[in-house]
Amino acid sequence: MAVKANYETVMIFSLKQGEEGIQALIEKFKALIEKNATLQNVDEWGKRRLAYLINKESEGYYVLMNFESEAAFPAELDRIFKITDGVMRSMIIKKGE
Image 1 (cartoon, helix red, strand yellow):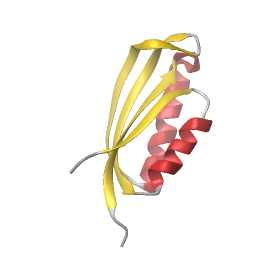
Image 2: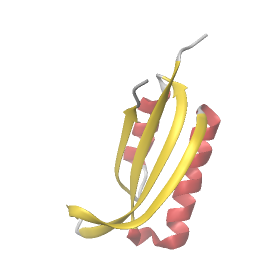
Image 3: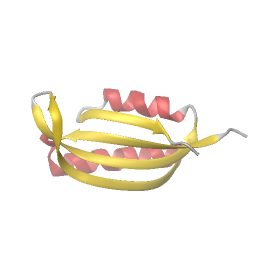
Image 4: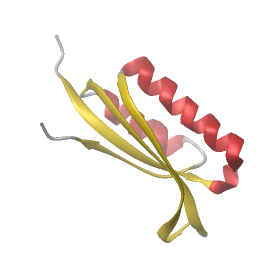
């Protein structure tokens, strides 16, 4: 049996996507995580000011998700973040015990 660990990911979505586009991205990543892991929590922080400009944008829509998965899934999730339009930044962290 594979060992599972707890992870959290923070995503910043571009406001250029519009409200519907942002909600579609949130649902896409929720479904992806639920398919490959156990989704524990979704916390939408909403629109926040960025510390510095990213692609000439000063604000982004922040979402935090906690999940439990095997070690291989976070790398695949990170790859998908990088190729998805509308994701300005993302980070996946393995949480300590």
